[in-house]
Image (cartoon, rainbow, N blue to C red; front, side, top):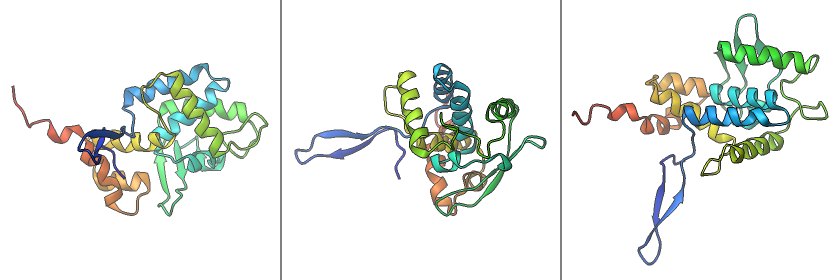
Length: 197
C-alpha cells in the first residue's frame, strides 16, 4: 500500500510516468468535501456520513453498518465494529458529531441503522461510494476521491498532529503497526526542524 503523493515507474524507454496520485485528503479538503455535500438531495445524511467516516477512519462497510445501538448520545461514544479482521474500538464523539447525530436521529426516527437510502432501507456500500464520488466532483477536486480516502485522511491527520503510532493503530483497528506506519511516514511534522532560517 503506497501513499506517496506520486509514485513513479520507468517505462521500457526510460521515460518517467506518474502512476498514482495521493490517496488521502487534508483536513481542509475534507471540510471542502463536507461543504459540497450541503447541496446534495440528502444533505444532512451525506454530511454526517462524511464527517463520521473521516473522524473515525471508517471503511465504507463499517459506515453503512452503523446502528443506533452503536451510538451512545448521552455519554458521547461510538462503538466501531471493524471489518477485515480489525479490532473493534470505542471512540469519543465530538460536539459537532453529536449535533449532527441528534439531527439525523430525528430524521431516521425508528430505524435500526443510522444511514438510510430513499426507500428507508439501510444504505448500501455502493450507494455510499457513489455519493462520495459525486460529491468530490462537485467539490472540483483535481483528482478522483474514493470513499476509502476518508479512512486514509483520518490516519494522515492523526499522524500529522503527532499522535502516538500505537494509539493511531488502535484507533483505526489495525492489528499490525506496519499498517499504521504509512501514515507516520507521511507526517510533515517529522521534518519541521530540518531547516532553520
